[in-house]
Amino acid sequence: QVQLVETGGGSVQAGGSMNLSCVVSADVSTNCMGWFRQAPGKEREGVAIVFISRDGPKRAYAESVKGRFTISHDKTVDAKTSYLQMDDLKFEDTAMYYCVTGYTCRGWALLRQSAIDNWGRGTQVTVSS
Image (cartoon, rainbow, N blue to C red; front, side):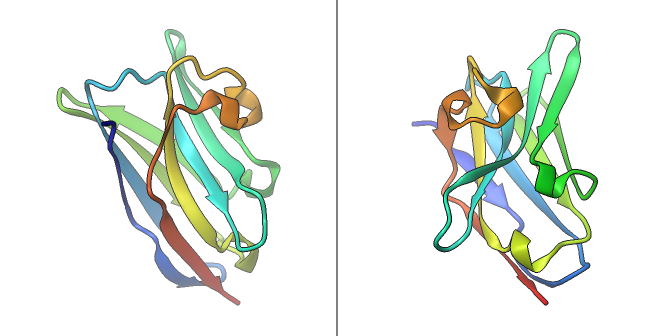
């Protein structure tokens, strides 16, 4: 069973920063990694995805987080890790954040759920105004 282990999350005041991390076993075939989120009463939405292409990583962001969130990733012999650096957090960023990975990643640039094969359990991010 594929495991995505998320760390980070918690509570922060508006304007603050937070970093989320997600570790995936190296043996999981992964061409894209990213983050989705779901706020209470709202649909799940894509936040950021990094596509690990032969030409180098390519990134997509939701309009609402552009300029404030940064996705990155690294790879070791044992694991792949994605990071989501969140700056200038707003109350509306409050949500459960899910780490995701994909193999074919179809629709990744549009942050579509069709690009995703594996989901983490989620970590709560709460921003107080």
